[in-house]
Structure formats: C-alpha cells, structure tokens
Length: 381
Image 1: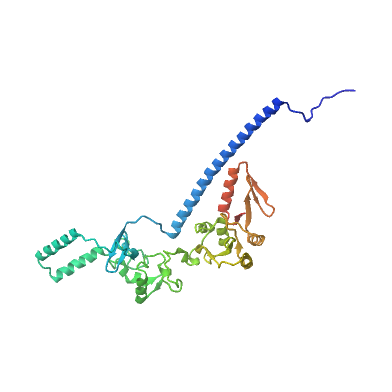
Image 2: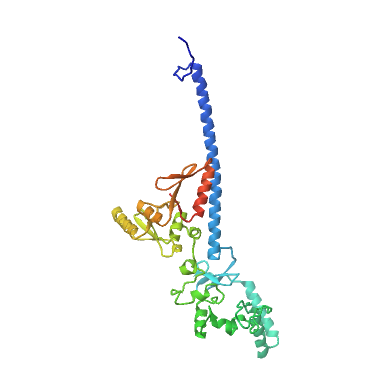
C-alpha cells in the first residue's frame, strides 16, 4: 500500500492569537473601506457640483439668447407729481417710465428748497434786465434745439432706391430715415397705408425697428396684440422650431423636452394635492393645472382619461421619468428607448440588457450623461 499527500480545505479551530490577529486585520480592512467610500463621496460630490453649475450657467445663457434681453442695474430717477399724488420711476438710459405708485404720507410733505427759490428769483431779475428777443429769433432757437434733440437713425433697407451706404444715415433722400416714403410704406414686401402706419405708431413707437414688427403688428397673426419682445412665448410656433435642448431652458426636464419635441403632450399627477397638470399647446408656456379634485379616485379617473386621449404620463421628479407601461409602449413605437445607469453599466430595453460596461463608475456616469444630452430618443428611466 502506497501513500500520497494532498491538500484540502478543512475546518480548523483558531487559537486565541489567531483570532486576535484576524480581528486586527478586519478592523484595518473596514477602516480602509470606509476611507475609500468617503473619498468616493467627496469626488462624486465635487463632480456633481461642477456639472450642476455648468447646467445652470448654460440655462441662464440660453434663456438670455432666446429672449434677447437680461436684467441689469440701471440708474433710475424718481419724479414726484404732487398735483396727482403719484411717484414715477424713470430709466435714465432710455427715459421710459417703468413704474408708478401713489405718494406715501411722508412723501406728501413737500420739502421747501430755499436755495432753489433764491436761484429762481435771481433768474427772474436777470431776465428783466436782458433786452427782448424778437419772435424770429425765438423760432430759430427752437428750430436749432429740435435739430439737436432729433433721434439719429440709420437706414438698413438695401432694397430702397434711396439707400446709399456712403451716407452717414444710409439714405440719400431724407435726413431722418423714417421719413423716406419707400421705406415706411413697405413692410415685409407689402404696401401699407398712412392710416395703418399711424395706427401702429400709436400702439408701439418702435415697431419699425423691432425684429418682430412685421408680425406682431399684423392682426391676422397677432390677434391679441401681444408684444413678442416682452412675451417671447407668444411667438407663433411656426416662427421658431425648438429642439429638446431649447425646451430644457424653459424649465422642462430632458425627458419631458424630448417627448414634447416629438409632438406628444404631457400629463403629471400630484397625488398629495389631487391636482393634474398638462402641458400647454405651446410647450414654452409651461404646465397648466386642472381643477383640484375632491377625491383620489376622481383625480385618478381623470388621469386615465388623459392617458387614453394620448397624453404621456410623466412623474413629478427631477428627471421626469415616464410612468406606466401604456405610455412606454407608445413612446417605443415612436422610436424612443429607455436607459438606466447601473453603477458601472448602462442598461436598456424591456429586460434591461447591458448595453455597455465601464471599468470606472465615473466614466459610466459621464457616458450616460452624454447619451441623455445628445440622443433625442434616449429617455432616462
């Protein structure tokens, strides 16, 4: 009989020293794990803060570009009209009155300016000693003053027969370009009457220079006479085609913006307040709330009705995920696909198949964010 030696993993009792050694090793490993997790949280938090700042800055800049305006610190004057009991706020850069209010009780107590009264009295005495000015001289002074205060304007209508780029104001015929017959009678290629020009002047003094002038002053387009500069959301949809990146600047999530761009309407349900919200016909107008329902059952019946009518149900959360298999099925039929970030994997499809695997979770997060930002049919689940 011969013998052969082999090694097998068999249970053995630990000595007290071995137990103490393993306990120390466990403590060390646990401490290392906690340190690594803390470092991971700090790095993730730092990257998240930087990404959020970029997203916020991009939205602010995009909104400025879309609206073609921004808020700035402008010096204003307060003019007190004691006869009417009103205070008017006037912009110094444009001279436009931007606000008015009633005088307070303290403001109604006019302050007596003794120095101003003395100056006025002195001016009256000086005027009495000056030789009289004949009427022709007064008219000449007024004419010069009007010339100095006239608004300088430059013509950019290259189709006008009087246009000449070598002229300081771009017009050979008139010193004030708004007096040029050919320019003021033609708007968007069609002739308008003097009565129509006067009507538009009474509504808005700047309509000839405004980029929306030919549309916002047309009753067949702008029936409510809304100023498109102040309310860009009122611009007819045919004038501006919005991408899902554009719609994210109007406080829609990426998911919501992509679905809206594809032509769908959205519905969401706030269960706590029993209110159902739907998107307006123009998505730039945001969400509109229906009536508050008395019971949860009534609200949920209305929600089912909206879904049956073709609305896509999205959740009230930071990413606006799609709710319910019915809505997902409709979107998949339209070419949409749902993706999920699984730590170090990006998963997709009904069975959440792995689309791509990454060695590092940060690379996975970056790739997932790029996919959500670039693919118009990729939705975050």
